[in-house]
Length: 184
Ligand SMILES: [Zn+2]
Image 1 (tube, rainbow, N blue to C red):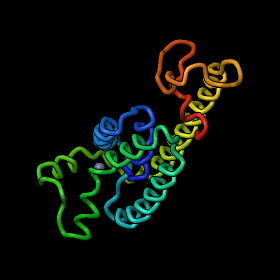
Image 2: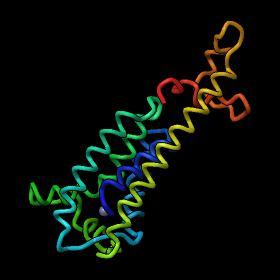
Image 3: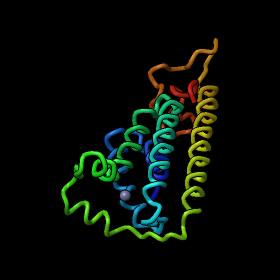
């Protein structure tokens, strides 16, 4: 699986899992889960594609981190880092001659791959769908936040209770998204 898709999956995980530690762990798990899903892979041109993919992935990661909702930025970054971590064996082997992971883990990581040279188109399609989904989720949260902020205002336009900010109640007045509404 191309690293760009791992980055976007990590961003989605970080958006859903709001704690950075948990987002990191789920991000790592998502990497192996995605590697099990049939995806593109072709020895002959792999390196050339991997270099471009690495650069695109880094740019996507920087953009996502910069535009992430402020209240989710830490977990989004943690999710992306976790989702990419298992593939650091490749650049590490290229530049330093060895993987940072135990050989048994690397061997297992190689073994679980389900690659086919015929699935190259699948990768950008998955990337585009993930990016659109991420945008949609972030926009949806922003709209919820604006609505919740509207409900949360008492007389004089002030929030009814500043103590309730960013504390989810689960009820109709759920203010979960209030704090970050301005920045989404
Ligand atoms: Zn991998």
